[in-house]
Image (cartoon, rainbow, N blue to C red):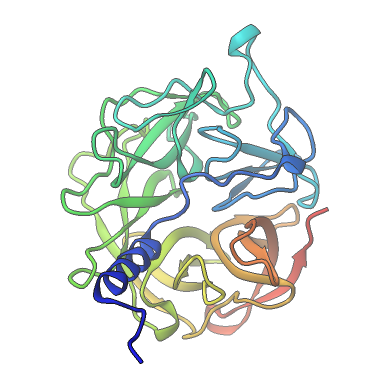
Length: 349
């Protein structure tokens, strides 16, 4: 009997799979029951969370939802999250934390509203006390390629403004996504992932020091490679770097495997310095599918209210891969030689 998988069909299927390996959905639209309203409790999709503490508040930014270029959530306990309160007046009133769109990025429209479909934004401080929002977005004249931009604000919750005419990181022959802003010992660094070239160049994680104002790289600095795909469970993609210093050790967390599958998981390495020499403490994931969640990834490390090491991440509910990747938080505890274990998981209310 002749197979129905003809050559064109196989080729098309292979192409779609290839794209899926490196492409996150441009929008993570919540269903109608989870509208991203001003100050309201939000329990919907929130991929690639970046979490930090601001006084008594927990603050999270994430990949575009609800037509917001930079969606933000706040919480007082890490369990119940509310959409960022709106600012501005009249037609300009919005709870989008980014105002003014980058000139270099492709724009989308929802009614009269224009926005940029950002991926995995990260918030961090500069050396001058200002706040940075690093994000990935598609290029205006090459929308299949994503590069990394920087916006700035005088407040942690924004609004963030784009002042650069060009992206900060945009390799010539590949995309760059998943930025992380890391401040350590008086210096600010940008981490990111290069998407690689299928069959020729693997995905890699990088770091480079920023200027004091955060809007460019420090003169004389260079990009340093931190990690590339190695362990079997990580293939074919390593991404989402998140660096933190905790109890004298420098940890680098990352996501790996296919984001749209139950094999997506979170690993970590211990680094000798911010610029590299990172080694994996264990050769299996720290967080993987199980305990009512599937495909954990897009993680962000931060220090909790009692000085504990915590990790925010997104995951699907068990049995619902492809539905909504929701925000989760776990508490980690260090053991001997920098080995980490998960000791508690907060369930979203």
